[in-house]
Image (cartoon, chains in turn orange, yellow):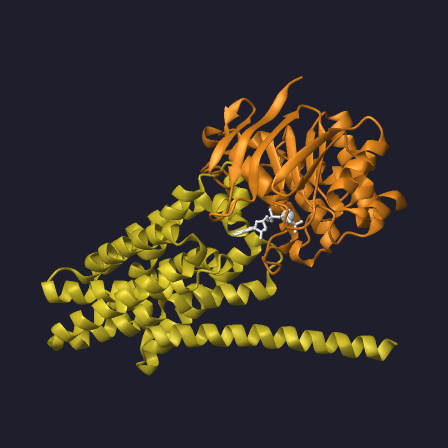
Length: 249
Length: 278
Ligand SMILES: Nc1ncnc2c1ncn2[C@@H]1O[C@H](COP(=O)(O)OP(=O)(O)OP(=O)(O)O)[C@@H](O)[C@H]1O
Ligand SMILES: [Mg+2]
């Protein structure tokens, strides 16, 4: 299978203390990888390292067959950060303006937005069901609506892989459901590879095709064959407390 | 009333004012939204040091000040990279260095204080033809640059990390942007004065943010507010013999207060309406 991301012997620490030690991970095209682990287990750190936002002390990260250090085709990657909705909420930008931002590299420097780009924005907003909000200020939307807008912004550059860091925090149950259905559609119908950090164990066990458990600086990957080993693996990481949570779903 | 337009200095002041009234808010909107407001103050103090150095050395003060503030701008960008977590620290370092240098140079240049006052507070009668030339040429160059990089500057202001990830050459654009700030400050000081340049970058933007329905709308509104303040400020300063910088900034403050007042009134009327119908 086509390996999109290849991580070998990755070590990372913000200071002398390492938070990631000897991480190895392959992500294949079409994967729906869930990353779970307790708070502070360096899930966000791992995503940021893969994206080249943090420089690892040791090890190699390849993405689309290129070292992240000299990777340039950013349009192929989408990223929705954990803090996507905590931007400056008084920023005077409309939904349309925010979503079109990810088209800018394609439009090119010194050129301005054309009608065809606006149509693209409209079509993409339609995918997440936010097209009627396109002239609203982003800061005036609810957290869940903002999250959908950020997903549209990520989608518009037609990425082959999307990284999402706890995308459903603060979103109501119904919208969460819609949101996960949307991701599933991207994954199944459009063959977009998805890597999602989440604390939502129920969804993780149900939706993803592979699961990576983080804890104690290490990472353990399981392929999904049936639900039981999944839950067992999770229990091993979270302890008995999580066991109850897993079985509740 | 319009006969004053026949005076050469008045024509120059107005023309320079109109250019500055486009420059300051179009740069200012990105400064405000990136929460870099201190940068304007910091670079303007360095520009002051440049003016003092120019007067002292007998060189054209505006070109000297342009060199000083661009060098300081480059230093801020360099420091900003070394203290990534404390971006405002680099600005504070340059601010202190700028004031220190300016004060030392001014004390050396004892006899030129009158000339310096004009640069400090802005003075319409002193816009020379050569000032107008440099303001026009550089000003149009800066406006064209902003126009061309408008969407990239917008993205960086909205979310610098995402912009980088989307493949926008963020560090080059940041470098260019800070040079644009430095040049804008230098060009504006003849009319608004060094001490008040950064207010003119910030106040019209603050007002426009109260009303903006989109980013484009905010940009246009802030230019409109700046133009109103500058043009009326120049006339009032002329008739009442006031310092133009102070007059312009006070009018900007007034516009902001009026807009805030109208918004408050609207909210009050809305509440009355809601209470009345329920
Ligand atoms: N900028 C930083 N500087 C220093 N240490 C950091 C920084 N960011 C995170 N850390 C530390 O690194 C560790 C991993 O943090 P990270 O944010 O990756 O955890 P996480 O798994 O995403 O947690 P959460 O579930 O709360 O989002 C934590 O111990 C955290 O304190
Ligand atoms: Mg995290």
